Amino acid sequence: MRSSAPSEDTITSSNAGAYLTELGVRADTIEKSAASVRASARGQEMGIVVQEFVPAVVSGVAFSIEPTNYSLDSWVVSWVTGTGDGLVSGRRQANDVLVDTSTGNPLRGTWFGSADLLAQIGSTLTDLATALAGPVDIEWCVDQAGNLLVLQVRPIVLPAAGVWDLDSAEAFSGLPAVVAGHPKIALRRQAAEAGVLMTPSQVIVATSRAHLPQIPVRHSSVIAGSSVVLLHPFTVDKRVIREFAQVDQTDVDFFTAECRRYSIRDYPTFDSITETEIRVAKAGLASAAVSVVLEQDIWDAEITGIIRSVNNSFLVEVGMGHFIPKGYVETSAYVVSAMGAVLSRKETSQSVVFHFMNGHVVREIDPPSSSSLSDSEINEVVRSLRPLLRAEPHLALEFGITRRGESGVTYLIDAAESDDPAVGFEVDSLERGVVSRGRASGPVVDLRGREGTEDLHAHLYQSIIGEGPKDATVFIASSASVDLLPLLKACPPGCGFVFENASLLAHFAVVLRERGVPGVVLKRTELDRLGKVVVLDTEALPIVQESCGN
Image (cartoon, rainbow, N blue to C red; front, side, top):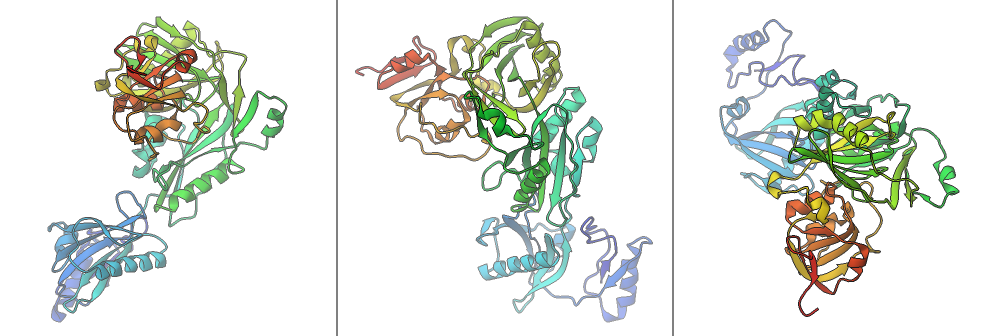
């Protein structure tokens, strides 16, 4: 005798286990059992399902997706010997098996039966999910003749589809759980609570059961484009999905064609922000039953930079334009005391600047101005971001300045985990040109001129592996950019890097320090004089010297 209430097993609420089920009911007690099941509804409307009882050899449940992250790449089956009432009630410990959707092979856990039975459960889940237009979970059993029987099927409850404008601290309270815990959302919530300015943004939640939600068009007056990032699933085919979107029909090609200093490095893939959001959401739905997209304004920043707390002071690195954390541009660096005194300056001329213009990334060569900041501008950066740095001292914050001077606005762009305290990062590295401490030796490989183009969509946390050398090698590179991450991840122990320029707080430098791979900055004339085999030792002077006999 099984309950069948209007409020259970719907796409918005399962109420699994909320009502009574009675097994092994005899014919002469059907009415009594039906009354007991109805009574468990506590006055709510209740239907009754009468099913033939199966004296099962093995019983279980199965989900057509991975229920903890809604992934379509695997599914889960749990089983116990005998009937399944102890499993669904939680009184018995089940055997959980994670199954690869593409191969049908168990990825984790122990399966009791044949591969054919497992495949039969998988195909049953696929058929039922297709029939119900979304992921399902089933209760199943194997009878004494070895037949697979489905006892119940219900839709898996997914988060509500919709659009949330993140325009206040209160706006975050209504987000679905799959969204609320994401680091990018947590950062925006913390910034809102701390009173730290960020650009306007919205979250789009789409599910495999619903049409994509209506996405309102909204943007600020200083918008230079939009960033559309897939938050869930985290990657598709091991890549982070991010697109830059244009705002209107401005002819960026026309405005850049007449000046040789400018070239367009990255075109928006789609015509509008809404179209971009829809395409990114659909990319997520290709590998998960729930897709979550964050869309945020890109402001026309004159300066962007990174700030982190170091030894009761602040290290600030800045450059004109965007993509400072990716290490593509030369940066100026400042050390600021807790009281606001600028303790150290290391300013440089910038050879290239990346601008956003209506969602297009425009590359400017040999800009006429410089990225240097005054003491008051540096202190304004610290003042604006200090509330969040106090709450999260382990973060390195990426920020932007819309205009330099009294009319400029400093705002938070993003954040990343900064160096582990055990790494032993010291501010004096700024003066010595040391990006990452350690020792390396080996033949020199000069990567300058053949590093390839900048990957403006590359992400620090995506899975990227490249081909590395078999033996320890010292590489020369133009900059410490994220383009080198695949090479670094494939390098054997003992490798090192020498750069023409490098930012201490950029992504690649952080990974160097995490891995204990030495990296230093030398002048171009010094790089050109290096021998074929060198020793790189950040504790010695000179830091890079020719190996004996070379």
